[in-house]
Length: 369
Image (cartoon, rainbow, N blue to C red; front, side, top):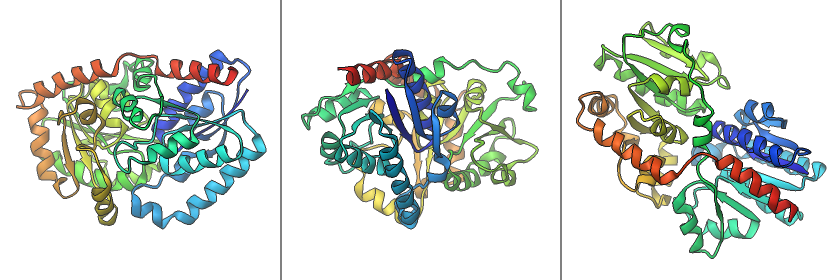
C-alpha cells in the first residue's frame, strides 16, 4: 500500500520515522512518501519537503508568512493527488495538517492522524473538525481518550512514542571526551528548541544565568537543521555546543533549562530536573493568552495535573528568575526531590514503550479491513 506522511517539525520527524518502521514490519510492500526530515528519509520514505522550511512559530509569525505557507499547502495538495496514496497520515503540526485532512477527505482519500492536535488546550470545538475529516485518530496521552469521548469520537490510545525513542537510545560512552567536557564537573543542559526563532530568543536568556553557577558546565543542545552560526555567539570557553545529541546530553546532565515543547517530557523521562522556559512575540502571546484553556504549558504538568516543574512564561522568563529556580532543583535544592518523585508518577501514567508499533499495526489493519 502507499502511505503519504506529513510531519512539520523535528519531533514529528522522529516519531514519523519510528511509525514508518512499524508500518513496514506489518506491510513489507509499503511505499512511503513524506514531508519530514532526515529520520523519516532514513526509515525508507521518499522526502518531498524538509520540515525546516516550514518551521514558523506563534500566531503573529504564522500570519506574517501566510503566503509561504499557502504555497506549501498548494504543493502538498498537488503532490497528494499525483501520488494517490491509500492513506494520508498526519503527524501533529495542526495548522497545516488540519487543512490537509479536509482536502484529503474531500478527495476521497483516507486520513489517519497520529499525535492529535492539542484541541484540548484551546478552541476545543476543533475536535468536531477532527471527527469530520479524520477517519482514525491515534492519541498519545491517556487523558485524550476521555476528552474525545465528550464529542462522541472513539479514538485509539496507543501510548507515548517517546518511550520508544528513549528505549532505542544507547548512550555514547565517549560523549564527554568527544565534546571536550570535564567528567568531574556537573552539567546543566540548555535545550532551546529546534526553530531559529525560539533558539535566538531562548539562548540569550539561558546563557545569561551562567555566572550564577561557576561550578557547573553549561552545554547547549543544538540541531543540525539550523546553521551552526546561529549558536556561535553563545559559545564561550565555559559554554559548549553539542549537535544532534540531546539524549546523550540528558543522560549525563544534572539539571536543565528547557524550551516548552516535546523536550520537556523527554527531559522528565530521563529524570533530569528542569525549568520550563517560554517566550514569544508580544502579539502572539496576547492572542495565545486569550485562547489557551489549560492551566499549564508543559506536557509534564499537563500529565501530572499539577505544577511538577516550574514554568517561567513571557515576562517571568528573566535570567534572575531562571537562576533562582535552577538553584532549587540542583542537588541539595529544595525542589529537586519532589520533582523527581513527580517524574516517576508521570512515567507510570504514560504506560510503557510500544506506541509506534501499536499505531503502525493498527493502521495496517484498518487499511486491510
